Length: 500
Image (cartoon, rainbow, N blue to C red; front, top):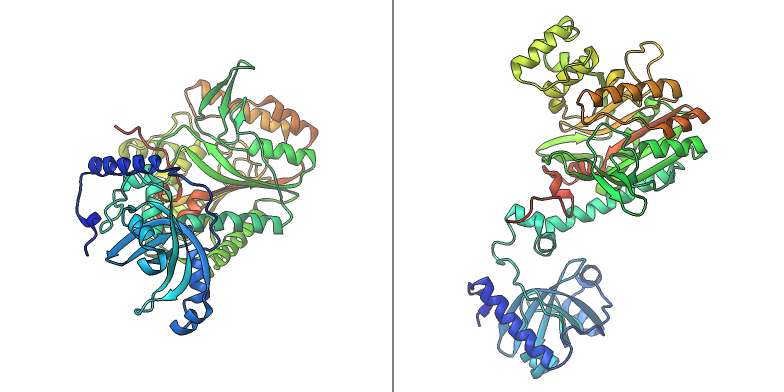
């Protein structure tokens, strides 16, 4: 017998019919009961009984109590089948007049796809060998008023998937697996750092002064204190205050907020890991990062080699290291070293190619722009770009041998930045002057320049030990380990324009 739900219907008509069913259910009692306690998950039942022979399973008479969303339904006269989906997977349910009861079976025939139901019964295998539950009791727990997407085509509209993630998770196993993997990645980061004796901490999400990165902040207002606040763009300055206080190995995994554009690599709200360790430098951080990424891949995937967008990345191999100038010359042999060190040449090149750059930049800032515009996207294999110019690194320690550069790196994989780390600037007077340079840039129109943070300077005046610190973009790392091309695919509820 064909299921009438196979026939295409107008969605509004379906919702009206379901509301009518709900009205009848209300008239006959509570349509949303809360007295059913699930005891078994589909995945565990499959693991325990999938390989048992049919007769042996029958002899065991295994009683189970399952619950979940009904995803498929087949009516066959005195017997019916349904597929139940819970948090772990799917399981087939078998409903008959003889075992479930004629009245319960008749009520089941009026259940709809998407309804949440509870089932008691025993495990058995069908003649085709499919593990199933022979229902002795079936109960409607939640009436779904909206229909699931067409079962043959599923949920394919990408924008709807982002807006209605709850439906995406119901319909697409790949989406569910992505976010299960994301959770495991987060656990692995914590496990690695705690294994290295780092202390997990939480620092403020609302700052009186935005700092720790060059970005435009979101602004808000605290009514009781009548003060302007900013959603944090980075936790860096607070974490380094903790190192001053004596917490010498700290990390935080939490959200940052930056008032910037949306792209396949950017979401205004994103997850960062930042960690700081005293008496270490940026060389230590690079080695630790290699170990950490290899560990996480092995823990989550069981291998250190991944395939991303059709290309192989091996996290067990040492990561490449080069300066921005070396990277530009390596990937663009048409440039000469003299040209890359010539401000007039670079400015002329930017204007010819319509690249945006800050008019007051020195050679370090201009080289950074050249690298970002021409080379960054070409760095597919894990590559540390090292020794950033001091003028673009206001929080990093200067090199003792070359004061115009800093002990800083950024890690690039698959053409995008994954991490940023450096030996921390712990000279309070140097930091104060660099903050003033940022203030002058802000006064000149740079909306992403940092503010002057007097309390942070005061903390440094108490003495920050030699320290190394790093930030890692969790969302971009999850993209790699789930082979996702768009950051929205790894954020459960990405920001979207308002629905029309």
